[in-house]
Length: 459
Image: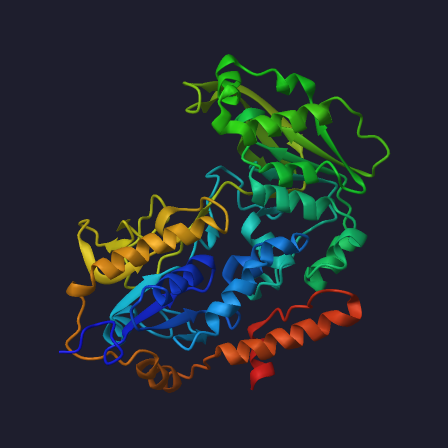
């Protein structure tokens, strides 16, 4: 019998998704010392997940990992199958038949809800759809955002909230030479927004911004950052948190807030207000969002474990636009167990679990769909390595009786179902067209924003 992972019997792994965790899992498999064949399956014709579709266009350095992913993708052990949706175009059971193992690296594709009345009023949106819209994601290309309103609210105080705030607050001149989608730039150019309120349920010491992203919001050309000095009077537990050297990022954030509180924000057309210890309890309006009801909170608990508790004190804020940015959750795939409460695929150290918490052989999980939406892009490397190590430890248990067919078994099925598979070579053609489209505008690229446009390039 040929040993699994040998040249005679390569370890064939399907990876579902093509973001950072997917590429880091691919890298770990290639470096494992085994002979491997990795087929990456992505529902869009374009790879790279949130690095392409989630990183803000005015942060091009954060997209540099794509250079690493491109090198990984050029390995002879790698095949890209774009424009293929697992659970629709191909079934999970069919992947199990064609591969020794399947790794789900499909991320957290949707937002958590606030769970309050009026949340679905026109004018109330998710951060995901807005980020996807200005990044040219095909799923959100046709979204319509009413920027004729003067007051916008962002619920949440993490880096995605900072991205949304920055895009709403920047001038067109600050954005026009980025890879922001042209349709979004045209709408932002006509924006009437004058105030953006960034609201957190806890205090300034617990805000989840990273220092760089927060500092940027005080350096915009035509938008001033505003903090009420009274909000910076911290309780004893928060002061103890900031005294802990492990919380240096939070301590730096508070210093940034203090700087803004001590200076006037005059001379700028827009204002960005940072508000703390408030939770949304209701959205009001007739046919469109008109007002947000907020409840004042107090912090309870030990340092580093403080939670926000409502005080019953409420106030209204007039606004016509709201984005919720309170975390992400995964989306179920037919044939895969799903933890509805936490929005992830249930797993133990990357091994997928069934509803009785038993390990399902050959199925693995990595990235946000494994652990929830935490960390930065690089955090996914260690996470993916851990999942691959679990897979490699299971090699003796995997089916090694006969070589698996891998992608060669999928192509006939996809063709018979009318699918059009986009290869990595096809993607490089799409990439070249986007870059060429951007040159006359002084942009790094002008993205193709529909699947149809992308497929037309490779037809």
